[in-house]
Image 1 (cartoon, helix red, strand yellow):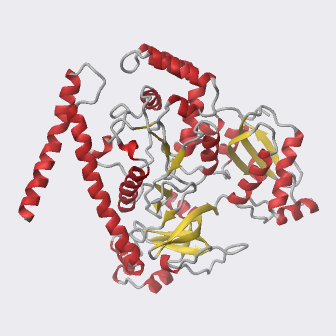
Image 2 (cartoon, helix red, strand yellow):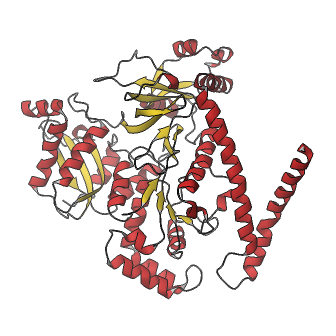
Image 3 (cartoon, one colour):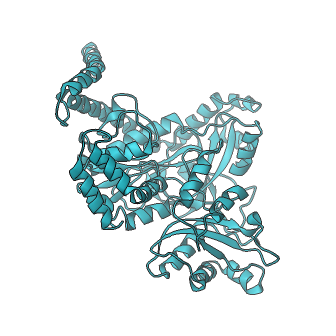
Length: 534
């Protein structure tokens, strides 16, 4: 029986090896745009293999989440076995208490500094096992919720980066994609999607990248329409070009569904600083569409798996396998240096924790800064939602206004600006720009808006009032005059896209491209400052 199964798998593998050249040969001889039967066969066989692989990963996840303590002990052994450097003597011990005692917690900023000085050797790429699991289980979950999406030609990625954390080997990487093979140029990817009106899913690396795509589509719509009409690439499609022009003339709201009437879902990778982009896309260009993220990723790689595409807000299972994840309880006020971490099985519903990841390359227990709230459990593993990042905190007088608190205040203020829709924002403490000028320290806030071209003093004052409402400490400092009023600036179109390009050019740019909301470097703050229009 085993021999027969082995022979069948061998024949299937040989068939897959033969399919690409045969499919390419037939497509070269074909005169029509319809998918060749060989390419269709390749799609069905590849999808069948993917389902088998996803079922195997689901079984592994079930076993690991049912025995969390054992799984995390194995993850610790994995880290110790692959450790390099002066801390290798711990390799002979797998005791969790000894591990914690020998390796103190390191903050992300300190780890980045040591890495730049050559003391650490870390990788910004996602860890293989977790990223493969997130990709396979995410594809299976997406197929269950939206079965039509996985049909041939059902989806297209419009950014050079993919929302799937791991690039699957051939033949899986070409499943249902309509993008030009091997193309990484943003314009070519967008044109490939625009010439395919039957799309069911639109993919982008992250929500902020998709925001840039739609902004660019509006700014260069006529050029794109001319390229489609002229047949660049492919055959001339004058009718499709006319449809693009007509869709753009009706404005941004609901643009995606006008371009792709069968579109059902938008797939992006969730990471820090993406919430505002998702809200803006859902309210304007992608109105009426569902959003799905297969995973939550931080600078250390894949941190959470999404098994529920139908849930409107991202919920993630923290995987118990390698790399080792610990949870640091979040307390009110400054975090205690001597706080003790807990393991996944010890997490309590409703509590907030900061993620701690052990890097196997340097054997460093790093506080990532990402804060999660436990909403439930999957077997013995916590199910969480991400609430903010501790590193994105504003504090000019010790007030510590976190990312979630500031976003809430800014959202309240923008809702009081008639016709305005927030697209992006960034904050700078006044000392970074030397903008106090003898006055009290304050916040410099840069916003990108839709529907409002100028900010009045009344508009600017709204944010400061909202900050006082959400933060009693800030209100007290403002009353005493220790902190000055927040200064709000409107930046022009493309300002935050330029900021992301500058970040991507940095050698230490993490995977995935988390969007910073608090800028600590003067050159990045000045980049936005030079693009202020009001």
